[in-house]
Image 1 (cartoon, rainbow, N blue to C red):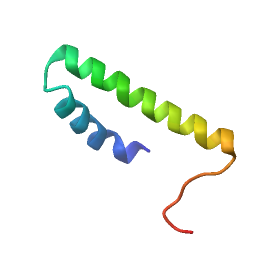
Image 2: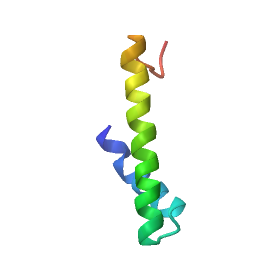
Image 3: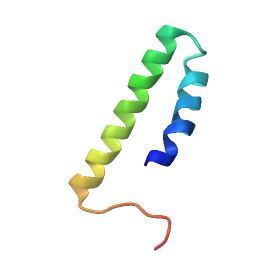
Length: 52
């Protein structure tokens, strides 16, 4: 999880078009997507992995 912080930050900055308001909104969007994904994983009782 900690290894993805840099990639997420670059994506948020690009999505927010390097403006302060856009970056805040893009950060909130990414936070909601990340939290929702973790909630769905725990709700189903399974974790997604690359190997099967």
